[in-house]
Image (cartoon, rainbow, N blue to C red; front, side, top):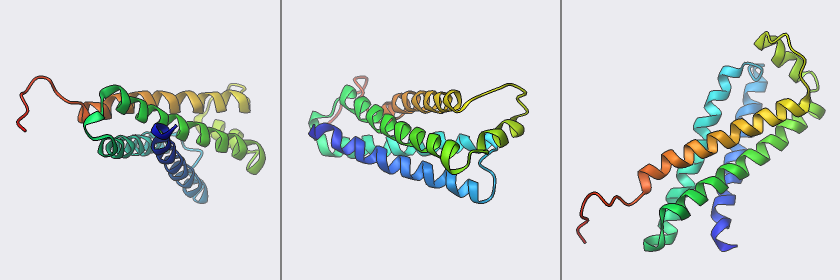
Length: 150
């Protein structure tokens, strides 16, 4: 239980930043433009990076690739789940016209419902989490290619 507290905390902070960014875009009516969602990946990657960095400091010599990768996955999954729940609440209760506006922006021409969009948001979040965790762990893994002086 102790091992997941730090990643969960970073996941909650990351989700808070994602929600704040979304609401900031909503202030300027830019939240329906999908191009702005690319910054979500950067926010998630930064959250995962910081979680793994702190986790490595906390673990010291006990830090392994697997434990760091797990910390990144837990961080990203927590952020994705919380943001997806917020997105569902926003699109159904706070601004029910949001999905209609989003589809007009995308010029989709296809019928879509809240569940499908929420599923897509979750899948995008989990994909970003996996890619970010793998990428960040390349920075923190111990390399066996070079001898390390102590």
